Image (cartoon, rainbow, N blue to C red; front, side, top):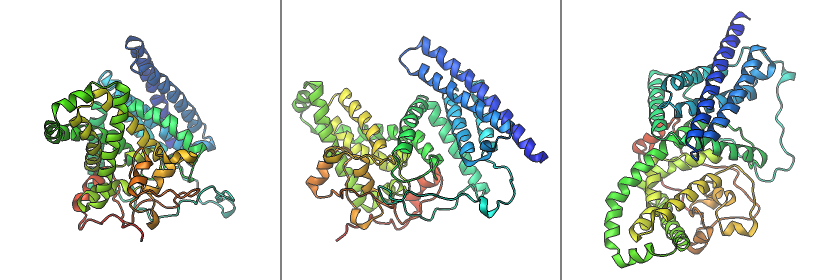
Length: 437
C-alpha cells in the first residue's frame, strides 16, 4: 500500500507541476500572439491552457485515488495531455529554453508514471470486462493480425540506444519545424472526434504504433523538404531547360485560377504514374511497402511513409509543375490541398459521398488501395481524382463495401529508425501483390 501511495503522490506532483508550467507556456504564447498577430500563437496558447486545466483534473484524480485515474481510459487521457503540452513547450524551446526543457523532462516523467498501472491484484472472473459489438455493423470489422513484439516488452541496450537516437531526431525536427506542433494539435482536434463519432472500424485513439507514426509526422516533413529541394535542383533544372521558354512564359502569364486547375491535373497525372511505378518496380516497392504495412487506418497513418518513397512520389507530381513554369502560388496551393486530402482519405471514418466518390478521392476509395484483399491489389492509385483510375482501368470501388483487413503479409519492424532501415536490409525485395485474375 505504501508503494502505491508513493507512486500516486509522485504522479500527482509531477503532473501538477507539468500543468503549472503548461499554464506558463500558454500565457507566454498568448502574450506572443498579441505582439505577432496572424501566426496562430494566440490559438496555440488557448489550447495549451485548456490542456493544462485538464492535467489539473488528472492530478487531482490521481491524488485522491479516484478509480478513473487508474483505468486505461484515465491513463490514456493523461498521456495524451502530457504529450500535447510537452510538444507545445518543445516548440518554444528557442524562446524560453529553461522552462521548455524542464517542461519536456517533466512530461516524459509523467508519461512513465501515468503509463504504470497500480497493482490491483487478481481480478475475479465475474469482474472481467466484456466486449460488446454492434449487432449489425455497417462494414466488416477489422480482422485480427499478428503484431510484432513491442520494443518496450524486451528493452535491450540496442533498443535503448535506438530510442535515444529517435528522440534526438525528433527534437531536431521540432526545433527546425516549430510550427508543426500547432498543425498537429489542429489536425487532432478535427480528426479525433470525427473518427470517434463516425468510426469505420472500432479501434483506440492511441492504437498500436501511434508513437512511431507521430515521429513520422514530425520528421518526414523535414526530410521531404530536403529531398524535394535536391530533386528540383538536380532533375527539375534539367527538365525545365528542356521546356521551351515561350511555353513557360505563357503558363506563367495565365490567370491564377486557370493555373491552379491545370496544376492539379498535371500533378495528379504525374502522381498517379509515380504511385503506380512504386507498386510495379521492385526497387521502389521496397520503400513504398513501409506505407502499405499499415494495418490500422486513421488520420495519423497517412504520415507512415519512408522519406525516399515520399520524395519520389511527390517529385513525380511537383517536377512537371516546376518544369512547365507554374507559379509558386499554384504549386504551394496544390501541396496544401494534397497534404490535407492525404490525411482525410486515410481517416477511420465511414463517410459516404454517393456518386461524388468517382469525382474526388474519399476514405471509401483509398481504403481499398490499402486492403489486404487480392481483389483490390494494385488499384486506386490516384490521390485526388478517381476518374484517372477509371481511365487507366485500375479503379476498384465496390458499392456499399469496405475492406476488413489492411496491410501486407510482411512483418514490419517496430520503431521509426528500424522502419527507415527496413528497405535496405530486406532481401530479396518482396514484390507488390499481383492483380487478381
